Structure formats: structure tokens, C-alpha cells
Image (cartoon, rainbow, N blue to C red; front, top):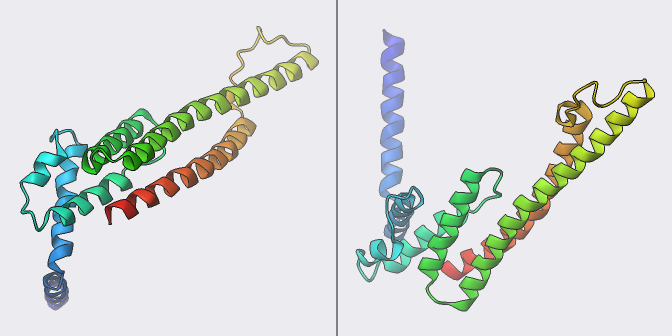
Length: 194
């Protein structure tokens, strides 16, 4: 029982320390975090307009809330490994466009990001298809050498271990290339909202 009580005491002490540190958070940081929380509803599709949410803030806090919103939106632009991530990234880009206003530099950056995301998806599918075709041809050739025809056996190159290795390597290279391009634009966007 003494062990349980001492563990509980330790947890309570840690909670007290964390609460004391939380009180030391500057007002600007708290306001920025409020902006971060507000944008979550936008990304989830629960809120249609970020500018309406921003207008509900006091004039003195709007820039800080806007910066917090932008941080979350920028963080949510990621490589679209599936349709859900692509939709989330496009929603984040539309939010940045809304927050940025009619500034042509913001529109240009967001358009570039959108093109990069779309090119990534197309490039990924193209590379995968080329790899599948090459692997299918190699497997068919090996089967013919053994006296079998491709029609006699169903060839699924994606199940071959060598395909998986080469696909992982190709995907890693592609991800690195596109991540670098995205990160460059995200950094510029972050600077514009700072």
C-alpha cells in the first residue's frame, strides 16, 4: 500500500510541476495555440471558413491566432501516400489561400504545392507500373526458359520479393525528392506567416 501511495504522490507532484510550467506560457503562445485548435475543425470539415473564425478574435490577437492556424495548415501538407492524405493536404492548401488573402506570392506557392502533390501521385503510379511491367517480363522469360508459358501460370510481379525491394528503394528515392520540394515551399510559407 505504501508503494501505491508513493507512486500517487509522485504523480501528483509531477502534475503540480507541469501545471506550474503551464502557467509560465506567454500569452502570445497561448493565443497561437488557440489558433492551432481552431484550425483542427476546419481540417475535419466542421468549419467552412477560417476568416470567420479569425474575425471572432480581438483585433490585437488576430495576427497571433492566424500564425497558429498557418502552422497547423502547413504541417498538414504531406506527401499523398493515399487519397485521404491528398484530400487533407488540399484542404490545408485551401486554408492557407484563405488566410493569405489575394496575395499573388501566396497563390503561386500554394499552386506550386498542389502541382507537386499531384505530380508525386502520378509519378509514383508511373514508376510502380514500369517496375511491374519489367518484373513481369523477367518472370515470363524465366518461365519460358523452364518450358512453361505465362498463360499456364498467373504472374503477379508485386508478390515477388525482388519487386518489393526495388519498389521500396524507388519509393524512398521518390519520397526524398518530393519531400525536399515540399519542405522548401513550406518553409517559405512559414516565413510569410511569421
